[in-house]
Amino acid sequence: MPADQLVQNLESALSKVPLIDPHSHIDPLAPVSKSLDDILGYHYYTELAHSAGMPQTVLAKDADPRDRVREIVRFMDRYDNTAQYAWFVDIARTFLGFAGDRVTAKDADALFDAAQKTFAQPDWEQQVFNTTKLEKIFLTNEFDDPLKGFDTTKYVPCLRTDTLVFHMDKPDTRRRLYAATGVQVHDASTLRKAIATIFMHFTRNGAKACAISLPPQFHPAKFDDEHFYEQMQFHGFHDLAPGIFWTIAEFCRDFKLPFDLMIGVNRRVYEKGVFQGQDLFDQRTSLIQYRELFNAFPDVTFPVSVLTSAQNQELVAYSWIFPNVLPNGHWWYSNTPPYIKKDLVERITAVPKSKLVGYYSDAYKLEFVKPKYGMYRRILAHVLADEFVRPNVLSEEGAVALGTRLLRDNVRDIFKV
Image 1: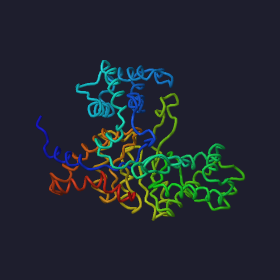
Image 2: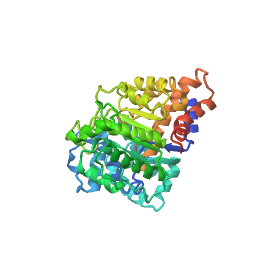
Image 3: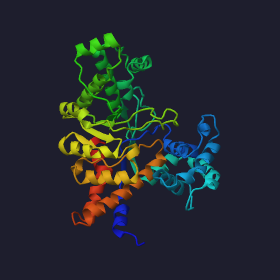
Image 4: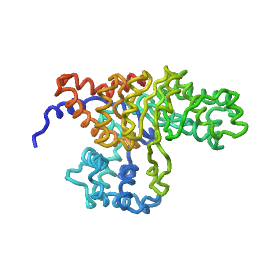
């Protein structure tokens, strides 16, 4: 089958764009893998292998890492049709010298040994940055993270607020909050003081965003101080999540930080699932639940991720109408080629180009940035070719400029990095 030269040209040009990755779970103190177990311990592989029949016994913390890798690879012939398998092959070829057509059970030990040697190189972190053309990557930082010991211009802090919003009723959260801020929270005033202290700490250390993942039934709501105090007196901190969330949005406005909303996840649906492989979505979520928020905070930018491709049209419509709402990446269960392509076509032909945050890796280790962005770039090249160049809407150069906006320029401008 002849190659599509136009798509190849576009993909080649886009592969040269330096990346600013606006969402990950990278630990900046341990950003790269130490062994192949770190790669295949990523929840996608444990989920897929378990779903395909692999027992969970090998996933126990005290299991031998080599044995765990052997078992996950042994089951790959049952999920080698997936996008996640393609990511692993990309990693093996790019970083581990793998030259085969398919990864099979007999490759497990050789790949494990190659990873041990490769990942032990003292400059491995910088090699991954260079190979990936990665310029900056955003983190996911708990509210009491000291933000020390790493370069915050390279690893960009992002305040993750789930614990503050949904777990303020837990004594340990309030203990941690007191330790981090010196403020004992007992009413709305002290809560605001504590949150203000956190925002000052984060912005002084280079934070460029806040973020939160939200369940389908969540409705933000503003509480006045008296109502807040009454709620706390009668119910403790239980059921105060809507008001705490609203308070955090106020501080995003005051500190001029975008507030990433990742909407629609139900936790622990598959209660016996593997670690990080228990959460799913349903169809109850609607952005109408956030209309008051979007209207009340016109000066706060809300990059929104939705868990299902089915909700993408609603996100497109909100981003079309609201200046402060924009579509952000392709999250989790929508992060496979068919959904990315569908969602990208809908976005790129309807939403102002200056508002499109094309992709983020959501990676836990830096080695995953390259294959994930590689998948996205290939899809982006096809979409640009079919929707813009072939219909003579844009030249090849114009299409590359549009793609560069999605890959890098808009992230730089929206998050001010």
